[in-house]
Every structure is written in structure tokens, then in C-alpha cells.
Image (tube, rainbow, N blue to C red):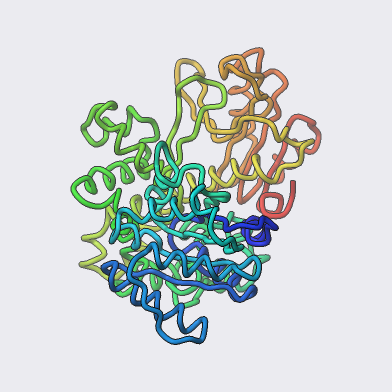
Length: 474
């Protein structure tokens, strides 16, 4: 889908230069995708580095001259550089990519104004061309700000594509055996769908079956020499909005969410702040793509928060709390005796719940769950005790409190779904009252008791979503 969006932008027949933005977190394949489109269309690709503008312009002039076969081109300003880049489209549509644009902006804070002028009304009076300039970056908050509010580029970009990591189905395709779903679901709980985490950063080594997962985690994630060991800290340090004096509170919020604090109030209590004091930092993490705000489909103003990356969940729930232990003892021993249990209870569960919601939103057939439904986590009070609900689908409508509940789901990874889980869902449906009377009950699991499967097969209101259906069915 992302490739199609980019291709449509590049191949536009508009007889003038066009500006597009592509951004998303690091290591998800943005650069690889853009570079392949550039190569296919004989365009121009430039990857910026963290250097002064003068050095950046010298590098750009050298690479542009080599591309044109004319030797080094002297570029004295970004205004001149942009004219040279847009001239590449003189004979037809051609992609021109400036990757890691955040480094350019860091060195010259006025570059967005320069680009805005190059695509403004005044520039249209000059020679026209069909260059398709794409600015690509990994600091989501920085890139998003380029077109926000009264920013110079607001209204100038004809494409603003936010790329995301692959979903769990696409991630499974990278396994040595894509049909091995028990390996796929465990691996996704560690590294999610980030392509770089399954390739370069683990030396292109993935588990060879479910029995090899523990070996792989110890060697590729927990080992003192593993690149992944410090990845979460590096991710935040690479985003200028997340780094600096406020980095401690950002890390504290991520750790609180990973360890079970999923509402603003519980996060604030966990780190000793008020909700109002916490809000700016929490919003920055949401804007930067590290945290997801999950709206409750049946209650007003009751959002929950989760980490928008399996590995962040793994880092803050498993790696970070046990850092000293991993420094002092052999990783294999620590994993077997301590961390494996933490992984099963604090990582696999939340990640699998997110997979269940993804299935409900993206992969369930229209006859299974209405595609217009509001889907998210919620809760219900049974006998005076609040119970979390992993998946709730409600008919779309203006007021959450009045929406009809059409589906209720529970997701369990690493344990066998049984009749007891179905009974709990039935009690939850009853406790939710008249608006849930027709709700279907969904049980998502990695293992299913035959007795539950037999009971579900005789009922029209119960759906079992095992691994095969989760990964391949609807």
C-alpha cells in the first residue's frame, strides 16, 4: 500500500513540481522503499548526515554532479540547491529524495521556508518541471511539525505518508518457515514488525522453530554484544523532541506503561506526578509514535495507553528492570530463571491483545465484525470489581456511552483457552446490560481446549480465533 501511494505521487501527470513527505520510525524500510523507486525511475537520492549546512551542500553538489555526469556542482545555498534538484524534472516526472531530512533542518532551521518558497505561487512563474521532491525523516514529531499549524510547508505538500512497521502477518513472512505460527507469535512479541530488527540488527539470524526462540533471544537480544540491547534508549536519543532534559520523564512514562499503568492517572501515580503535569510529555510520546492512545469505544474520555512497538514493551518490562542482573550473570541463566517468566506475563499478553485488536480492525470479514465499528479495549464492573476487556467492538455513533456493543473479546497468549474463559465473557456481556445483549463473544488464543472448541461449534454467538485464523483467516 505504501509503495502504491508513493508510485501514484511520483507518476502524477501534474505539469509542475510536487512536494511530498514520508516519515516513520527508524528501521521500518522507508529508505529501502524510496531508494528502490528512485532506482526504478532513474531519479536522484540523497541521504543527509548530521553535519553543518556547508558540508551538506558540498556533499549534495558532489553527488548531484556525479548523477548528471558533469563533475562536482558548486552549491552556495539551499535555494540554489533546490533549483538544481527541481531542474531534474525538466523532461518528465522524476523522484528526487532527500532522506534524513531532520539532519538538514537541524543544521539550517530556515530550510522549510526555502522549500516553501520554491513551491509557492512566485516559483510557478518560472520554468516548470515535473520533479517529485520527497522529504523523508525518522523523527516523527519533527516531520509532522513541518505541516502543522502555521508552519511554512502547510498546504505545500501533496503527499504526507506516515509509514508504520509491518503488521504481524507481514512479519511472519520473514521467518525461515512462515507456516510456523507458534514461532511467529513469540518472535512478534519481541521485535514486532520492524524489518531492521529481523535483518541487519540480528545478523539476519531468526529462530529456526519454536524450540530455538530462547537461544535466539539470549544471543540476539540479551547478549552484551547484541545491537538490540540498547535499541530503545537509542530510539529516543535520535528524536530531538525526546532527547535532552526531558528524556528521564519520557523513559519513565514508557516504563510505567510497559509495567501495567495504562491510564493517565495510573501512569501519573506510578512516576509521582499529577496528570496535568504529565500530559505534555505523554502527548509528545504519542505524537512521536512511541505510545498509542486507545480510545474506549463505549466510554467518554477514558483512553488507555500502550506502547506502539513490541520491542519497547520487551525493553521496559524485561530488559530495563533487570539490567544489573544481566551485567553480573550469564544471560542464558538469567533468561531461564527470571526473565522468561516476565516475558510471558508482561510482554506476550499485551502484545497478543494488540494483535487481537488488529485482527478485529483489519482482517475480520464484514460478516464477522462490522468494518465501521469502533474497536478498542474497555472494562466492565462485575460484582463491584473492574475487569479489563481486551477487545470491544461497538456500532459507530456520536456518543460512546450510547453505542450498541456488537463484540466482546478476550485474548490469551501462552495459556490454553477453556470453558472458564467463555464463562467470564458471558458474565461480562450480562454486566454490560441491554446494549450488549446481542454481542458476539470472541476468544483469541495460541492454544484451545477441545471442549471449548466443541462448545463454540454449537453456538452462533461464540467465535474462536486460534493462531491459524489470526494469521490467515477472517
